[in-house]
Image (cartoon, rainbow, N blue to C red; front, top):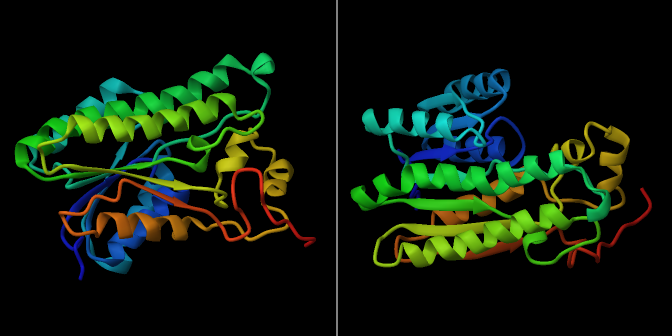
Length: 258
C-alpha cells in the first residue's frame, strides 16, 4: 500500500547524499516535496530532475538550518500558503574534524552542534505546533550509530548524535496524547560526502574510511526512512538502526583487501 502518495514531505539537507536519495525515493511514490538545503544550484538541479522523472510538485528553498530566522520565515510562508508538511525529515547534519577533544577546533564543534542539534530543534519547533493543530504529522530524525556508541576522536559528533537520540525520545514524550509520530533512523557507514566534509575536502582520507568493505548507500537509508514513514498510523517505529553487513558495531568492521 502506498501511504505517501500526494503527501507533502519536507526534507532538510536535500541537495545530496541521504537527503537527495530520500527525495528521489518519495518522488517515485508520488509524494509532494519541499526541499531545503544550502546549495541552491544542486537543489534546483534535483528539483528539475524530479519534476521531469516523476511529475511531482517540488518546492525548494535556500535554507541553512543553523539560521533560526530563515527557518522561521520559510516555515511561516509554508503555513500561510497551506503547505505545512505531513512528514518532516530532519536530515541536515554533518561531522567536522576527527581530533581528540583536547586538540579539537571549537569552530568544528560549533558547526556540528549548530547543525545537528540546534538546526533539528529550530526546524521541529517551526512545524510541530501546526502539525498538532492539524492533527497529523510525522517527524523523522536522521541519527547515527554514533548516537549509540562512542568511538575514539568522535567526541562532539558523538555527543550531537546522542542528542538527536535524546531529542527523539523527548519529542515522543512531549507529543503524547497527539497523533504526531517521531522516529529516528540511525545508519552506520554510508558512502556519501560525509567523510569528505569531516576531513575538510581531503578526498584520499575520506576514501580510506570505506576501503575494504561495502558500506551502505544513501539509497539504502532512504529505503529505511520510506519504510518508517509508510508504517500504518497506529505504528511508530521509534528507532531503526541499520548498518552494512560488514559492520557489527562502530569498532567491528570486516575489511578485506581491495
